[in-house]
Image 1 (cartoon, rainbow, N blue to C red):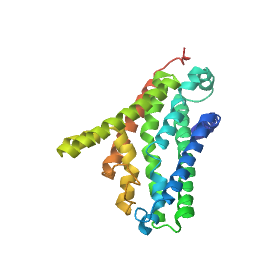
Image 2 (tube, helix red, strand yellow; image 1 turned 180 degrees about the vertical axis):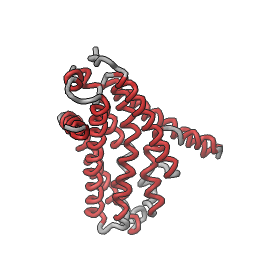
Image 3 (cartoon, rainbow, N blue to C red; image 1 turned 30 degrees about the horizontal axis):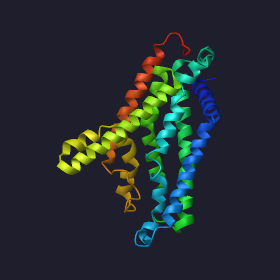
Length: 277
């Protein structure tokens, strides 16, 4: 086998490993249930809140409303065990004893987990569009769905890379997930507080600082892109802040690159695989 075939083997193995976990399937089901419940609730809104214009773009709510939490939570859970579980179960020694390089092994693990996330997003995106048509009729600007889908998938790269790094560095699945989720929550809280300070003082400094937080770029990128292409439903249907698309995409790329490089350095410099105690 050549390098690409070996990476593909590890990629397939990563899919089977992740999909064998019931919590992942349960979380996917929960995300779909949340989407459905959201549309049921919105369908009961009075006409003054849910105008005909808003109804025509409710597919955007289906795509963007859940991405602020569920997509990043799923990314954290998938990446958290990607590298570390192999040490905890003692299978890293077996896998790396095969005719495969560390770079191929890490690439297969990373791409396998990230493509699995992309597949999950395909399911939630299709579900959101179907629910929008089912509850609110013919939709407008539906041709923007693929672009927003790509933006959501790209935004997941940040917390997936962060947790993937912790999974290798710490070699403890639960610890990697907890730290990443803690960073997500703290970043979200601090960002909200900084936005509150900006609203009071009107100081640009607070906005500039909030944009450096990982949650700002990861959560605002899809919404910002959608807002640039089409009028989004107003009235609190989509609460994620809107910002500069290029800046958000750049910050995601910088964070992801740093995390991947740190993971690579840590992995290739580990001469002997170590089982978690």
